[in-house]
Image (cartoon, rainbow, N blue to C red; front, side, top):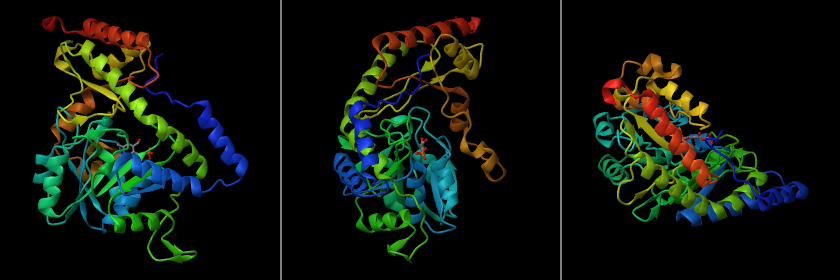
Length: 372
Ligand SMILES: Cc1ncc(COP(=O)(O)O)c(C=O)c1O
């Protein structure tokens, strides 16, 4: 089976981790500080705060910017944590629909859902595709909203020549092993605002202004130097891996865009995806099967396709009672129609050809006779 994701871990990274283990300095220390400096420099942000996961990054960012009762505009088609961490700080996620082409936040829909309590907007660069950055900045500027960019899947994505990690107010990354770079578990927050940086550092470490002197509610979301050693090495390689992902994506698009009933990822001018995932959408009218059967058939042919995400957030059991009545047609439709194909940098040309062949075959085998 060609896996949907594969960690790239080389000897120098393993040695770097072993050196930390031998040193006995395991907790957050100088390597974490070095990782933060290098990460901030690599994305063009003034500050970076390393944390223990992407979820922790979002929790810290929302805690730094939101008060209980505030509302934050969040896409309904994303991973749970984009919204659940808004709930975790006592604020309210307001679910918005997504654009059917980019799968990122539909800014017009977000505008319609604003109230007098809206304080923030949390766009997601989903699958590595930059969100509609300028429209989001305009909306935020007009209404004095804070922007928390969820870049968990978007290391190396660029917008009009700038890394997406350099945008205001706060950018949150994940280093989970399926992401473009990894520290095992881990996350990073970048910002250009000194006060936000100060607050995020405090919240990461129990709100301790000085040892055992706690001024705000905080948590233990510190990164270990073991993870940071890995992160420093991975950071040196991630641009090359992203380039390979982009090449792989281009090949898949070239060879799949003409398959009737299959929508391939779009790249708008100036918006460079980092292709954390290569996600296609099926026009189910054209196939005599549902998406899950399509995925099952790809598995039978050795292609590790997967589904991100099978259920929009307002239909998740945790949110259904409060939000289940909402109509977010694009999010609902995409959840039933999307599937992701392997695009990671370890793919060989033979793998790419096998993926293309399998998708084309399954599309033909399952095509409705009227659509043939
Ligand atoms: C869009 C998005 N947001 C947040 C997260 C949370 O990151 P982590 O798994 O590191 O907590 C993820 C990762 O799965 C994600 O894909």
